[in-house]
Length: 162
Image (tube, rainbow, N blue to C red; front, side, top):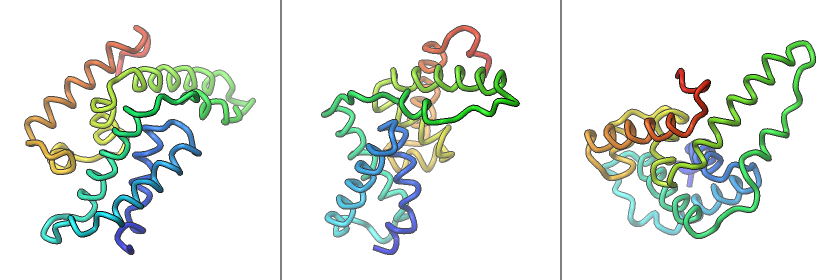
């Protein structure tokens, strides 16, 4: 599975954004790669492997989100960072903003969260997201736009400037 090895960092990043903790993301990304290995016969070699792998991984992540409500939250990962005393104020403000964004992202439905993560965290184009999710370019763009509006509405007033 050399191809899966090449794309494992994308799978991990996706899993981490869904899971919120390193431990859960490692478990989830491993589940994704195992599922890919088991379903490699369904891969169409005429299409990009990375898109197929991310689509499969998306389904694993969505099923994980639906089937298991985590006791741990994304907040755990925020506390693992040590602030630099020389720049404490800036880091505190950045941490508060990051915490607000992560909380707002967590409040989105798993499907909407995934679309927002693919676009704004992983940097995929609307066309690539449409291919990954099996939807048209227009549908992907529309649903991501709606997801971004939902995300902004869930942020505190002072964080909505983005």
